[in-house]
Image (cartoon, rainbow, N blue to C red; front, top):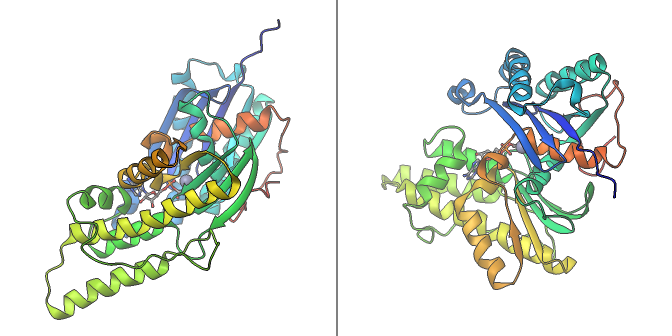
Length: 343
Ligand code: KG4
Ligand code: ZN
């Protein structure tokens, strides 16, 4: 029996406001996972300012990569390939990671592998459970995306549904801002919701037309904003914890229902969660409960692997690598790159 050689990927992620680098072995073993968050720089603007993001990626990228290599205990010369997010995301931010990855690939003569950011989020599920493998249904909920995907095989996706307006995380961030919680709102609403009554305020749930697995959160967002305005005009005191809990419940109900519907449609008894919002304790609890009832296996990453990181990019890049996928040094950043339409 021949021993298979270990494959080491150096991965880089700069699509939004996290400068991240990681070394991943065989797609599932994280040797280092360095994340430099810019949250404090963007906080005062209530959201990510693209130009500030790009500038700070430039400041941090080399430091973060060096730290990731150092902590991994692996020499750069022993890395097999360089994986990098090339879309979707903020174009200026993406270009910092991509240009650095290209320069490294050129200087070290290592192959370059461009990774789709959402594919990275999905792949975060392969890291902590070494046996977790396709096929499964994946719900990806982040600041920029809400997708229901049928993962047929590594790198083989069928999009079953997506948001028609706001992403789930975007709705969290906007409502958090409206009730004065600050950016990023997801974790703050998550915490506050635990103190509130999720059934105290009846907010709408948008299920769309029959059979559709698409999402829409703009109506819910307007309903919450209208509720807050009405309270303000009538002088009614707003119970923020009840708003947070009721808003969160409205989002969770739809996410859980549609994900289960997708699993039934494809006759799959394995579900994974991914993206920043999948760190939400309410969503995890609700999903756990329903999956137990329906006899469905549920997988989700630790919170640190739910929000943006480079370990997930390293995992995705590994599965591309073993399929022989390589990118040229002319690879460009694609801010609106669609899943399944990778170049
Ligand atoms: O995946 P991510 O880091 O970036 C994107 O690719 O967009 O997701 C960030 C989003 C933000 O909207 C943030 O508010 C949300 O994930 N988020 C959460 C939680 N932690 C992060 N939303 C709800 N509950 C959480 N615990
Ligand atoms: Zn993300």
